Length: 278
Image (cartoon, rainbow, N blue to C red):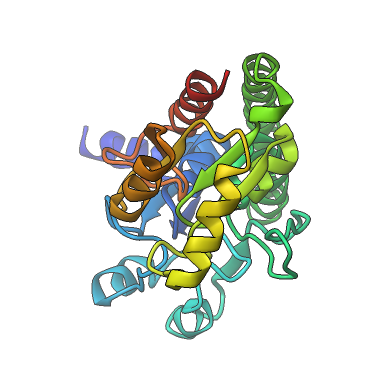
């Protein structure tokens, strides 16, 4: 009986250990990898994407991983240092690498928040599929079938968003947010992004810039100021009060209390935007 149980545990053991630096990447890996992968979340629940850096606990958890998933595009400035602490055999995968850049308004600085469109998540899933198939060829067909299902779910989300957004007049299609995280989203769904701060939640605009921005917002048909889950809304609430419009929270960094699914996070944003602007 002991031998039978031992044999069963060996059969059920995952073939690949994957460490992940973002909960949405972890979800993708579990969906596509299935029982062939063990996914270890390195990002702490309710952490801050722009200030997080792996500590000793995360380093220990990732030490024997076969693969490390990162967002890429500069989101993880610590990535090179982290890679040096891992086994040479560990494959570092930046899932944003094959996703075309979308730049901030009036800038050549790319918005690294590529996961805010299902189309980009689908692109990233194809990149992940290729790495998984290379790492575990025997599971290639299983991975391909799972990725096809995942891609179809992303297409469904895109269709739902387009249907809801079709009811929003063009003159109301301004997304005013705290930090610049919706450029990919705006390009995909035909909105104009307006940001109060820069790339991260912590960066602040100077007084003159904010005064100019307030004047600009008054000249447009801005119907809502979108705050961010997990960030202080104080300055955004002041601007909203000045304009006489409401505020409403969006999930911009893909981080939400309880680590909800991508579908829930995306539809939360779609429903919130649609409700405030249509």
